[in-house]
Image 1 (cartoon, rainbow, N blue to C red):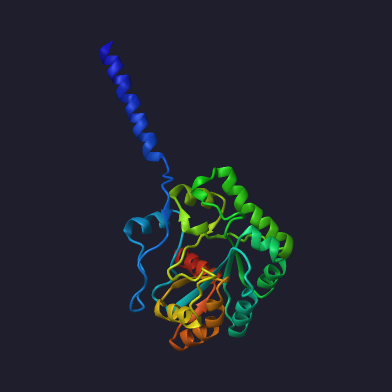
Image 2 (image 1 turned 90 degrees about the vertical axis):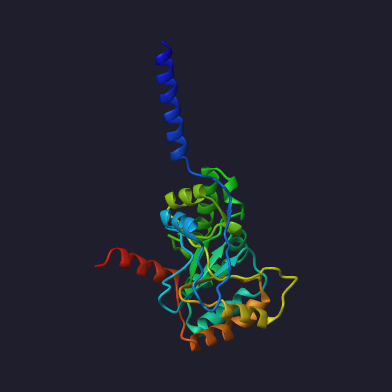
Length: 263
């Protein structure tokens, strides 16, 4: 009898360990690492790189080419997005704008302009919450509600690029959003540009855009920043002079797919 009990206990322990092994971690992670130096691509580290690869999340493009991907986070409008769009149109650069529900509801005319001018409208969630604290149902509602509002304005679906609010995520969030069909996009270039009451002048933004440039860079910029709006045209012009080209996330995904499944 004792032997049977011991065998049963051992079996139950094995099952418990198996369940733990299959469990997906919801440990909160905050995106960030040392900035690029000497124009070398950044590296998130082996462990994080493996996690991102498992769920097809990205923060870099092709690091063998001097290519830059511009992305903007749009939580709310501060009067500078039209100027940013003017610069992008003049420079013939396509970008991605990660928008919240507030931005979509407040500025439908800017959403329409983004779509009409060939930019990607990405998803930054409706209420900008920490997704690691939300259930599967709430995560789905947060993301799909943005897509629905964008569709009402643009008539376009499949806005499936996602940037987790505040750069906070977990393995569970990556898994859940991948199941929903979203491509998670982090970044390799960023600086403190979102503090609207502590802007430092256009040269601060310009210097950061130039100093951190590297092959395959995905830039995170905030459109609430006057510094960014004022610096953007000169930054793009001078980065082009340094041999960089600008592509969209769609280009990046196409190239990635072609590399994996060549025709």
